[in-house]
Image (cartoon, rainbow, N blue to C red; front, side, top):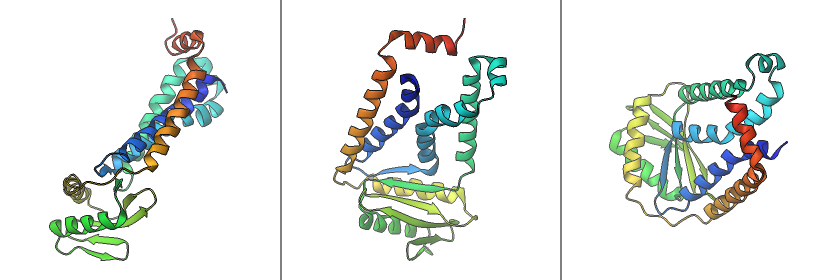
Length: 216
């Protein structure tokens, strides 16, 4: 693999790691909807898909027919597939940088304020009047939790109301920065710096890249 290919594969992923690190270092919990979380993750691995499966299985006949424009076509198709996956995926809520015991009580209070029939069964939360049934998945060492939908029958409007109310409650909570965020920021920064240096140390690489994308 060339230096540019390494940068294309690992550059977006390193930016994602740095972003997650910064979100874990703030003094407020951060709530991401399922759509936001999947879009960020999809963009992070987009380069790996382009350099890996797309480059490996790209038919030579297609490249011969469309030339360098085939990469733009492939990128558009990948974005469309990513969008389809995001829109059809089950709802979820991701909460970053808050202890599990603390966020569980906040979730319970928010759920009861929206639906008085809300109840827990172990790590599963049922909100029948909002059409929500989810399970709490925790990573205590990272102080992150996910509320993932359980079952095919889910009310997306109910999830939206729940997410907005939960976000407002979390905005009033102050937490300690998660020291593990420093590791993510450092790792992402090192990977991005190394791959960028390998890709752009020769000015001819940029000129060749532009000529491939926009041939004269």
